[in-house]
Length: 323
Image (cartoon, rainbow, N blue to C red; front, side):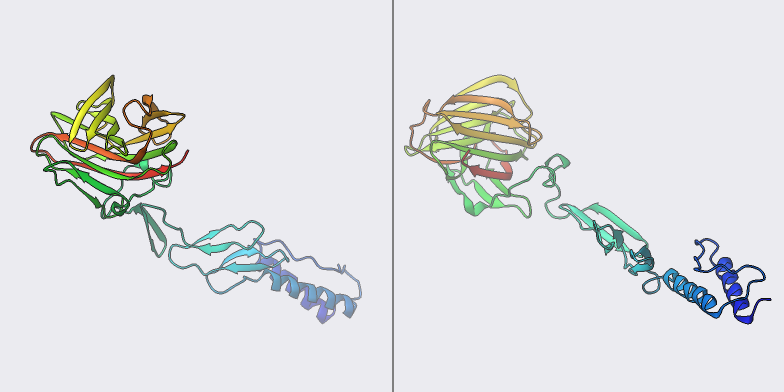
């Protein structure tokens, strides 16, 4: 015959089995068979095992928490989560409740049961997915780090943009020049890299490019002219055009384009790129082909001879370093 304690134990086992059919059954230390006299020690051991099993199987944390195995045979809870939070893994540690973090040009809006990810837009807009700072780093220039030089009668300006860089603007009054310049970091070896966007519609004669000036005031400039062939320009001073040479190749330099000028081993090497990573050769010439060996500044040169059309040039990224 079973005693009352044994009967209670069997009922408890039955209740646990029925109430938790989707959960593995608890393991008891002792198995009582039909006809066996129940020993109180054995019955209490089974009872205590049931209590421990049910306690361990109880939900962890407060209401609406997400459950995880705490590593000790019991459940623990993460949360409850706030709007937009997700459970994120942490190697070797407890899962964390965290919100997504917006990167550059991205906004995240959290609401009950939803997360909305969108482009930030706003003032200045985005440059282009091809020039995303998360993919290719951009180094934003500031107007205060350059000196602006204007040819006679020219009121060209350099101004900071709201969020992306600077604008070098030359008025369309016919055959006027404007530069933005800063000291060369090393007169014999340097690398200047810029992301430039000519935002004006141009016709007739025009040129823009990276320029180098020597202490005598002469400029050598490498860039693009008119129908956008790669060109090498020489100016006796900011007012005076000297001569130019043009390649037969044509590139669309009225779109955002990366330009690079390297000075090394006595040679200027100009190259350009549309993705910021793979640069195409544009021009190579001796550093003393036109300039003296005493270099002073490097920057951007605009020649605007398109009467009636201003020439704004966005400089979105700029670095001036030694090799």
